[in-house]
Image (cartoon, rainbow, N blue to C red; front, side, top):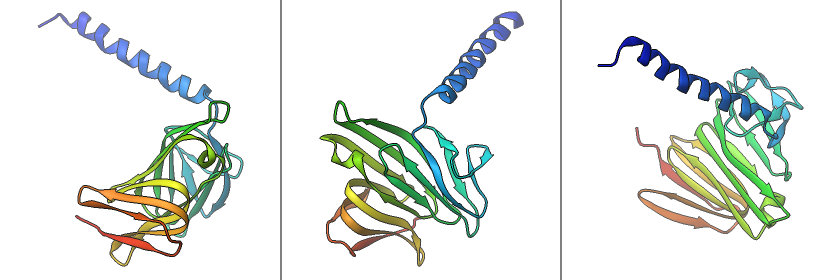
Length: 184
């Protein structure tokens, strides 16, 4: 076993690297901003307010009767319902290369996503993941969340492919939806 001083040096290096990565993330360009808040909501460890910048890898949370809306740089809109918890895992919008990517992880609560300019790019990938399944977004306005003891997905416009380990369905008619039993 190495002497204690070697162990201390080993632990100090990863801590320094982690702190540097955290600093770099805050210096990055925002992916959008908060455009509406109803009742207290959080972004990261702070309180959400209209105009607050939103960054990749931030967690958005709402409480009882809470609502939170984020407008991304391409004008896509993400709305969280009450008791929601969503992280922005990835956001790339580069119209000069016609590429875009958005990955959201909705671990709790209801969300609505309305796509904008990112959906018009030739190379795009928009995925909203939840514990019940994943939604691949294609020119879409859709709602997803818990309803009547299940997890529902309702298509309002466009097309969305809903999948999990048990199968997949593509919703392509507005007003149609699918329910996924919540497995505990």
